[in-house]
Amino acid sequence: MTHIKGLIIGCFTLLLLPSLAYANSSANNVCRSSSSASPGNNTVNVKLSSLRPFNLTPLNGVLGTIAMSGNITCFDEPNSIWNSRYDFYIQVKPNEGSGNVCPTPLDGIGIRYRNINGEYISCSGWSEVFKIEKPSRGSSHAMSVPVLAELVKTKASTTLAPGLHDVSLSTKGKLLSYWYAGSNSTDWAPLKLSTSAQLLVTPCSITDVQQTVDFGFVAAANIINDTIRKPFKLGIGNCGSQQNAEFFNNAASFRFESANLRTDGSLDIKCKGCATGVVIEIETEDGKTIDLNRTFKLKDGTFDIDSQTIKQRFNAKLKRDPSSPLTVGKIDSILTIVIDTL
Image (cartoon, rainbow, N blue to C red; front, side):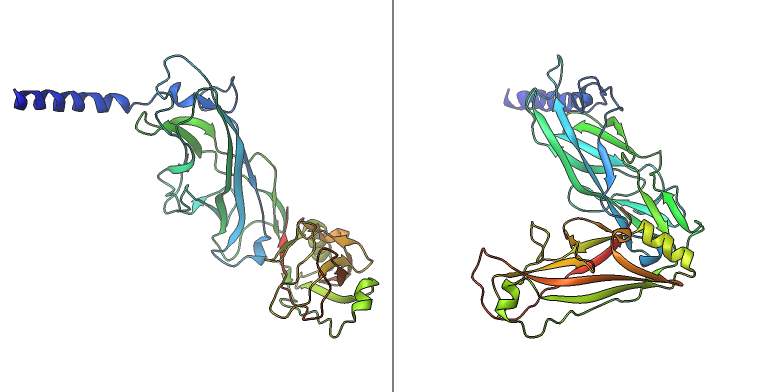
């Protein structure tokens, strides 16, 4: 009897498992962007977080990153299979190309998707990019995927004419949804950029790759009196013509990166033997403070354009930080400036 019972349980298990794994667009759409969103037509925000000019990016380098965000509600519907037992997933299916750098409509630019573990997704395959763990009925969830994909420079030069070009994704890409161990995946949403962005193609290049701003000896009284400023310039050249330089200056922005960025947009000074009670602010030559947490449009700066060269002029300023005592020491901090077009 024991042997026969074991056979019956084994047969029952084999019959039960395949019945769970089926494609059901209605079940896979229980968690959706709105109550009226039909299967395959949910909406999410897919937007470029950064976008560098084509000629300022090395071959196979990252031109820009794409983020995904939105809100999902798991609506209470009859006959749903999930009822807090299964995990809900969103997948990316590129649907075009080979390898992991897939084509886009722009010549010389590919797109490389990342899954939930940061691994690249095959252009001919699919993988998970977002997970809701055993959602309860009626629950809402914020979708946040900071790096869904990267735009990659695939050619040393492009057939795109100098100027600005609208960025778009292949219309073949899709977002899929499914319940882990509960269903096969089905269409959940189209995969397309929800905000407009333009790629800048121009021969201009950075001429001042690295600069050191030396404050020298600084008296504490001068910091308190807000009089310590050191000018510096950033050069962009090789534009080919003044017209190209003017076009670049009107279209491009600076984006700032540093381990020492503060929430108020200034730059901390943190090192062994560094001064305390003081921060660094960056301002245009004519005295407008720049928030380093935001992009800064070149056309809003103080600049000269001479022939094919742009010179952007700035000040580095020492400012008293009353949140800590003022002590003498080194002034040392690193700020990376990236040219962006967003």
